[in-house]
Length: 252
Image (cartoon, rainbow, N blue to C red; front, side, top):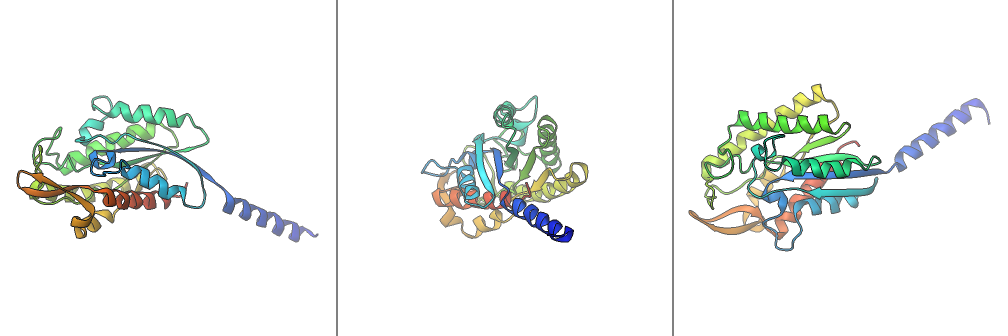
């Protein structure tokens, strides 16, 4: 075998190794009642469906996850130092970060409760403060867990008459829509400041859930009639798959 043949063979081995390389992931899911899985009746929240989807994909050798989604939470509740639930995220991350052979990932979906007219902590949260809060949370995670990655999903649609203990209505939905460009702009900034660490997650579920609201949401009785806020059993599975697909597109 001459030198060129040896080089070609070694290159072939390298490509083969890369194609068969396996990834181990540890995911912390941060969010509100939708992440927690409040609307699903079978006890399986979106993160479980996202993980099940990822486990079926080639290249995933092992996957650990913790769902710390908390009902009613806003970005204020997850702020480092002052947020009620900030410690939940760090405790979960601490345990998973200890698995040094796993890539630590944070999957975030916040904004629904921030957009409310009244009720949740700090609501209504302006688009500027929403972005500021998200940036504070994410930057703390990036600093505390070197090498970690963050995936930020767009929030999903809710009906304009949504009004349970908290008041959302059309005003809230319109405010929720203003958060989406803020998410995208923030991620673009991170691509410059922290390249390869913050990624855009799902962007399609908002429109899909709006289009299929009666099929994918649990009907709930409120102060302005039956509203749609929490995905039902089918919707939870659909949303989880959207998240799983978004996470799978990241180059780990």
